[in-house]
Image 1: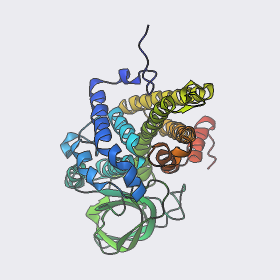
Image 2 (image 1 turned 90 degrees about the horizontal axis):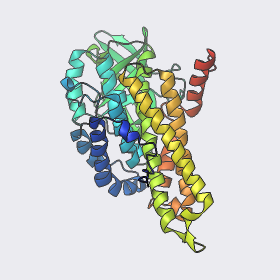
Image 3 (image 1 turned 30 degrees about the horizontal axis):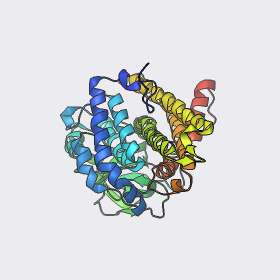
Image 4 (image 1 turned 45 degrees about the horizontal axis):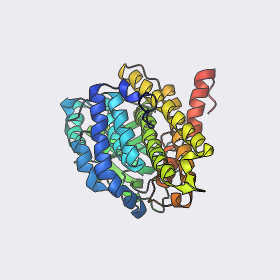
Length: 389
């Protein structure tokens, strides 16, 4: 008789990983099991980001993980970074969001668009968790239309003066620096703005029902003056911020897999233990069909993200492919989290169980870094050659 399959990995995707990739997944998985899961439910209830975990995340080499070792980073491949995101989001989307913003939206643009001086000054400190960043692109009126940007920067001698506002900024009130995108006379450009600069204000967003274990902020710039040395010189136009978003979206395709696996594992245990009408819930056809559907969709998402990672590491990943995976995997995970919440019955509405927390978090994950509709239209444009935005 053949051995039973892993219910969270029916196609043995793990066997397709290299030894190094499995080691990364295992080390992050242990961290999540030992340090994250015991506290994250309470952190979510309290609306508190667990800052005490930042140094351990940094010590594991998870910040800027794919940036070369020259800059104090781990120099991992793209698949390893995806597995980091998957395991962190198995813990909580807020924790993965923190690492995504730090790595893909703040460290990446300094690495890709910055000067050597900027890289050497910031990246080692950011990898060590000593300097936290946030990414200022989205504006209160802008949403899915980043070209409709009102924040502007004007040259004044050897400085730039920035005015405007940004909204829904992860890490805003934690950050030591902000990567700010602003309109200039020469198109959209990026700036490294220390949050201690006069005229910079971060205001935390409260009353959230999603990403409660994460810091979300509004940023305000009132004649914020930064030197020319703080401009990212190697990119102009929307290509800059959109390139960062592609990196972050790639990680997000992996993250929801972890959230969905956490929900499925919980209901597998629950339906075996819960006895109704004289038999375990797991013995009911309706329950087995639901569980099978979850496993099918998780398996599809795993294979989608793994192939995307292999394309990325080969230098062949295209933004449309990222959009397809982000759309598919976020939809997969939010549907599974909601279904698991239903199977748990009344108990499922409490954070004693993981499903409601993941379901609420995924309302944000399916929205940020491009809504589901935006990604559908990106794929539609690729298929037809017609831009329907």
